[in-house]
Length: 184
Ligand SMILES: Nc1ncnc2c1ncn2[C@@H]1O[C@H](COP(=O)(O)OP(=O)(O)OP(=O)(O)O)[C@@H](O)[C@H]1O
Ligand SMILES: [Mg+2]
Image (cartoon, rainbow, N blue to C red; front, side):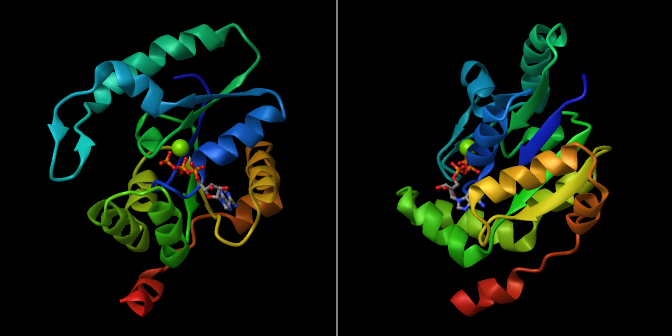
């Protein structure tokens, strides 16, 4: 895979919003993993209300797309909650306080079970743990306080190698379990 950035995080943490803002500033091309997956959906799981996806099939579809960008002077941003598993060099994990995330997901009319599953995954830190198990450099940014423009600027600064931002947003064991417990 050529130098590519992943923007990952639990659904609703702000990946697409941030990727669009970054792309609008030039030099970056967002690739939504969900769009890649459309052609390669596998078995529907009614319990989880999701499609089971084979990660190797997504990787293969992504490679074809990245070949298209190789000749252009653009950095692909691979966007989605599986993007950290697709071989990026740099991964930004967006995080969100469980209470705020719940509000965002309820506003989308997700089923109660799907809201709960995602809120718990965020509180436990499932995606940051997965991302830290990859070879990519990993950064972690919370999106429940700053506005999207500021978060996008932060990501651009990290990608450009600004040392103070890289230090500030290194993974730092965010613990949302207390926040989750307060909701119960
Ligand atoms: N700092 C922030 N960064 C990103 N999004 C934010 C921020 N603050 C508030 N939001 C809001 O949170 C919501 C995030 O939705 P978005 O569709 O971008 O999430 P997503 O991670 O792409 O979800 P999915 O995995 O389902 O595609 C938007 O309504 C956005 O305006
Ligand atoms: Mg999205």
